[in-house]
Image (cartoon, rainbow over all chains, first blue to last red; front, side, top):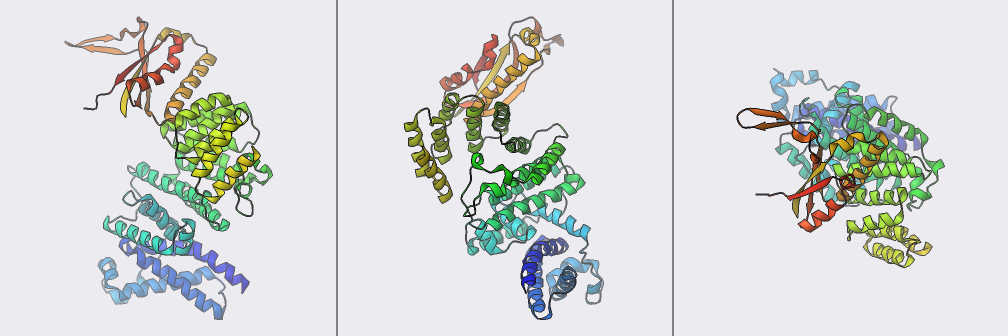
Length: 409
Length: 113
């Protein structure tokens, strides 16, 4: 019994996405819901049948056989499908059985990759792209998605529904973008995967397994791009490198109770060396060509953070990387981190001068940074800034961290 | 918020005399300065650096090599920043590392019309 309970969720995630992608590719984006339903029903059948007959010897083959049958029945029943498929078939009823529902490894990978491009389409919002990716490409249940976004099932259902509607309206094709378009389309895909990873990494959800799963799924989808010759490009490698470096700190950055452990307090023995090595591998792979994307810079910054020792060299390198990153794209986080690196590479007084120019007065990290910088220089000012940060912080995790700083002062 | 063009002028002969270490130290200063402006979300583009040599095209098919090598101040590059006023733009320009080598920054508001 135990074995089955563990087997089904695992199978569901991996096989649901495969079945959904292949069927959606076959039916077209306008029938994305039918593809999803067939994949879901396949697992309902599995749950029912396997509970009294036991798990079959080859569960995956069983699932594919059932999915194929359900798909054929659907085609048979539904006139809409025959409109799409009929032109290829002279005698629909007789030849239904000849329709090839190709669940080979190659077609699965191709379909998933094409679905990734279809879902990460510039016509739908990034938020919807992430939601749809989680549902269709990662096989997450609606409840899991709601949990990850700290939202409810209703909101998520609405969001996904609207996103699917939009894809249908835009008549988005499930296909690999042309060589001419690929760089631009890839940019959207990378943004979504990046946010998907961050959603997991910085999620406030109390479910630690779920948080890690989001990150691992983002990495799996990025790896899908690397395995394909046309999308195995420097920015993709840089992104995966960045993800590996971040993921290497999973075990070290949160306590069992979910409390955040700051970088400087982390036990580096808990850092996953295997992932660090992989990160370095993909960082090297990303250095081909002569364009530097923001992912290259962020991966290089993350690389320096895998070296725990505080040296001037380390922080000077990080400072220069942030200088470059900010010139490509401004973000408040990068501006604050640059200023922190400045305090480590040079000195606190110079950093205070720079920090006060930022004027990010509605950002609690801004006041946390000022609090840190004033520490030992002017403890009164330090406390004042931490208190401002505390008042602005929205989450319990952030408030806990800041409170600790005030107490330690 | 207005946009301003920064035109960097310098004595290019001086730059050519710099040792690799001096050039690297100078580059770092430029990166710190541009990074600081960018951290304030005031950088539109870091622009480009320009080669020393060039061509001048005049009417009646007159094309000459750029006069840059003979003059003390040739245009070495440009950036575009945003600032609320000339005063703010000038404050940014005062930190430009090019000034340390006797160069100058010409600050010009971009006419958006």
